[in-house]
Image 1 (cartoon, helix red, strand yellow):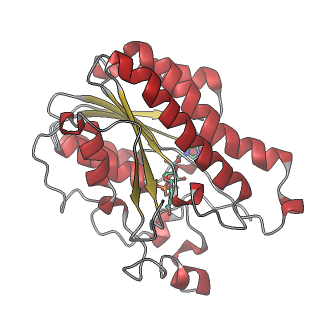
Image 2: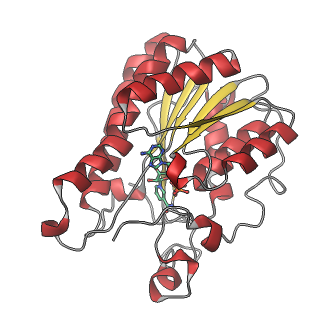
Length: 275
Ligand code: NAD
């Protein structure tokens, strides 16, 4: 079964996505950020935290799966920052290039790039994972990373920061996530290689590898079924993380305070670990 889009509306237990509880301290004052997958889940929390820290923020998302884009834009603007919604499909290479150009012209430049949009699907058996399934996951999670990073690099100055969202699945793959785990391991390798290349231009690249986080990506629509009950139970906290609990790591990696952090993978897994 396909992970259903838009489930966050029903299942999202996050009362404020960080806009009330996350108080910024101008760590990103005057910076300009693009966050892919910024209408929902982790990307939403990151986009809002960035605005709270003083950044102007463009968000992208898949229009047919839109969760909360208008709301995110309103929250960014309420923080006194410039906001821009850029709907489109990252599986489309020309659109990825267009996305970067639109973000740059809307914000007047780009300093922070969070490549976070992702998809997953559960396939119990190898026989059920079609080439089309595999292709969609590869394009969304991995090819788009290359297309967006490649388009963005010419716009980035020394001091810029690229952050990618991988997953604990890169290190502890589940049997039913063959394609997804493969792309997430690819994101780690790609990001580390890019970090080595771009640091020569003063641009840092780092990876966040979340463990279980309660977002639309997860199954069951928040219904009290067994899968939902079990999700995140094996973390040290006996529960999944909430998107706002990931945001401070992205803020750190985006900020100038991370000036000696490059090519690193930050697990935010509730203690499940990525090593
Ligand atoms: P989410 O469903 O809330 O957000 C996914 C985002 O990706 C949405 O904004 C969606 O519009 C966007 N997206 C998906 N396909 C796209 C496409 N073809 N074109 C453009 N945008 C597209 O889920 P989330 O959990 O916040 O996911 C964010 C990232 O975190 C993903 O890369 C995911 O793999 C990763 N991650 C999530 C978890 C978790 O437990 N939720 C764990 C590890 C890693």
